[in-house]
Image (cartoon, rainbow, N blue to C red; front, side, top):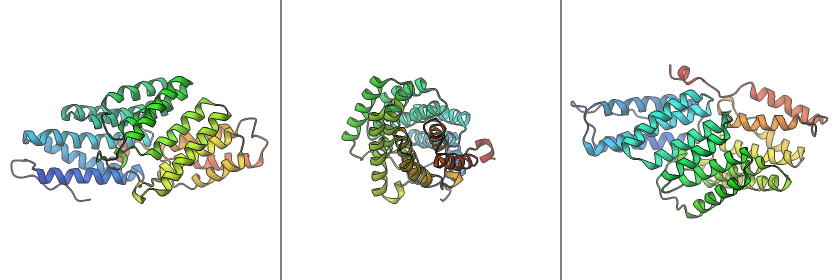
Length: 328
């Protein structure tokens, strides 16, 4: 990716430069779906610094808000990567900066994305009520495109972890309506767009968390739909992490239905995932499978013991990183 060219002698940007930076942000957001998060941290960080350098100089009023929007998106990408790499402190720091940029740019789409990242951090930290509240609060900014689908899906998953069936159903109804209305014309690129495949496996997690055979069957249907959608997606949308997450949700649904052989097929496909792709959400899902395999329903099975050993090796090499080291 080319560096932002040096501005003129007075440090001013122009529309051509703005278009170039916007193109680079779109490229990074697209690459986020197919490359490990750690591989993108430094390119995003360098471009972020260059955009903030431009903002420190005097710019035309018509360019200031778009530059803040781009700076905020780069901060949001760093926050998302931080969350995926298990660094909630860095995620929180960067979401605060991203939010300030979103306010200065008055960018609702960016605000919605930030609330989703914050909800994810709370969810994977075990603060399920907080995750639900954050996602719900972001809905007021989800004015177009896939943002409402993103936030309603996250809210449903978080309420499910709280055991609140009523709120789960309400949030999933909102998500379904948002998916039906989404025309795909909001120009959100890569990870900034929340695809139906991702919404499907969020719904799978929600049904699974509510418990019971009927909900487990619904979870298996949603996870299978997610995998089908990812299979037919264009290559730029076939994220290894998204596919692994959907497979693990299907694995956990099979385990809930006591189908160990079917679960093992999905699980062993994921166990070959490279270490750099073993993000916090992937490790969280595979840890859930490990806990189920250690339950009395499976402890006598030789296959279960083998799978637990394989999971232990997988978990020994996560993508977890301290972002201060990665950016050193």
